[in-house]
Length: 224
Image (tube, rainbow, N blue to C red; front, side):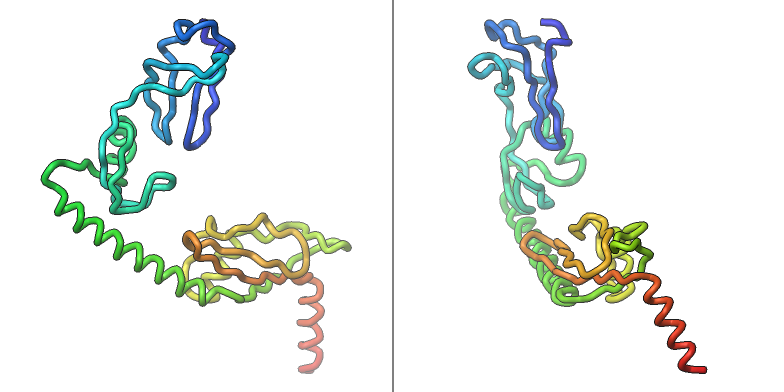
């Protein structure tokens, strides 16, 4: 089969090779590539589903690793999980997300598991405390807008993060602020996802800049 007959479907976590209908598994090329999780591995012994459209199964050598950090869709820190050998060698272990499990290391594993659990509990406590400080907080912005209240610019998550840090003295990762850029005058409720199941909600009020200028002028006039 020619190279241009294959179509690769790839995303951040999974990938598989989709080929045109095949008559038999013998038509599948040996150079086919599979991404299993975020790591690329050579696909061997590929078997196809009925009709030959989707290719993705093969034999894998798996190893057990201890997770040192929480890994999405795999497990929490302190867990022992089985993963593809290539995924462990090329991704998890080099990035210090996991370490190999060997025969005589069970006691050490238990110590690491308990330490990871304590760390996770501290992170949860900190996130819950921060959520209590943030919940119900109101941030006020002033911006230029058109007649229908649409802003000429927008209030972004970076703007919100900076305002929150100035307000509470704590840095907030803007990626945890879940909203599109705000482009309309008025009040908006915005969620901040601090951890899984720990969500704070703040109010964002955007007022017209002209009103703020008029208020400032009136205040100055009254003082005179």
